[in-house]
Length: 352
Image (tube, rainbow, N blue to C red; front, top):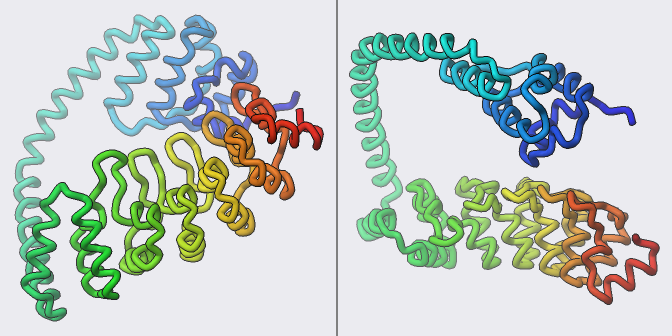
């Protein structure tokens, strides 16, 4: 099999994340891939750690000695030498590492003396900027004639940990078409308040609840349509998950990333397929969503729909050309996970 070494080197982060680089390639391939690679210090160190069950110290040296590693600072030099010493048994590095650590300490002491007047100047600059910001905010408030009650409410909500009260505040402003006040609330950072459990912001929850009017207001006021919660979910993912087609269409119309992935690699299409939201599935496919995209485990939208027994979604995905033989990292296909009704259908079209 002919391998595209340059392509593999460019996507080496995928193998590092999946911890399968040394299990996937033989020594000759590893040497060539390293030659084309462009690794950060952290990536190289992670590879060294992942090599230990597969390669001995001599093999590791031979395989990775031509790696191209980008070094940003002296700390990264020390870290790389430390791990090279550990995994390649280069004990000669002990003296070098000690010297670099001591030299870095002396440089740090000298730098601190230089930094003192710089810090004082920076502090003064920040004070001037803060005064300027306060003046600008005062003038802005005066020009928009915000009521004292409204400004006090915003000030109070900025301090609260009660997300529901913040969300209700935005809902009320939206229902009153009060774009100017929504803009002010967003400017003050209120939309970034988060739920306790999933750390969803106001735009996430509005997308989840299908409040199109509020979603539009937030986007028009400059809120980030690609904002992610603690699990890496975007507003479009929540709209797709909760079958809010109108919100999905709007977010796509303003440029939301239909191929965005959460921390597990799930896309909006996968969420729609998993939760049997056929209308959303059809729309996402119609605007070009990748029907064969895979999550970090190799699962596709078709595998998700098959596992949950969503026959109509399975049939639709097959009708638009989804790969019925796609395998995840465990070698399983859609048929492997399908329940009886989906299994019968997949077998009827020749799936294996």
